[in-house]
View 1 (tube, rainbow, N blue to C red):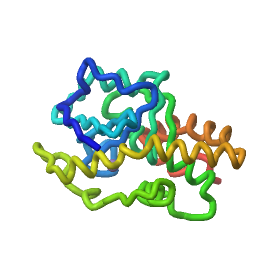
View 2: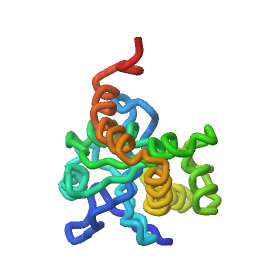
View 3: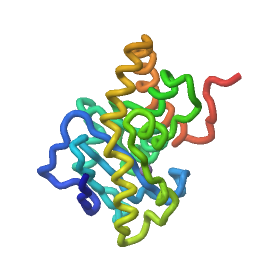
Length: 202
Ligand code: MN
């Protein structure tokens, strides 16, 4: 496993392939209030690329091209949050989403534990350290602990997706999963728009 730090954008010549794991770290949970500090990306090859956002103009053309490219599948864990943050901060669409949390909820109905740590543990036998979850991601210099924590959130998503896809297929829930993934951009847009807790509720 290795971590590469980039400032404000991905390098021009970096090709992360057609399925990219993505996670974000922010100053907090409200996209209007709390700025995007870090975007972690991995092609699933054991390398995490960390894009540290020190410039709040969020120019980042290479990152924006990747996020908005409908031919690139983006794997998130709890995509609803990351997609709201990314679309709001970068001002781009984020088509072609896969969410490991949604997939887990659809097939792992024998448990209520759908956190990334639980998935890594049960599906991959990996013990994930979540100690740096609440830390100052806006710091000018990220600590090695922060960078390793951030990288951990994207290292395993391809493997988790593969395991969940097998289960979705086995249980006949691949299509409904895809429909849920297709709705995530809209769900995130509602979050950005305002206080729609559940658009389908009575
Ligand atoms: Mn994270």
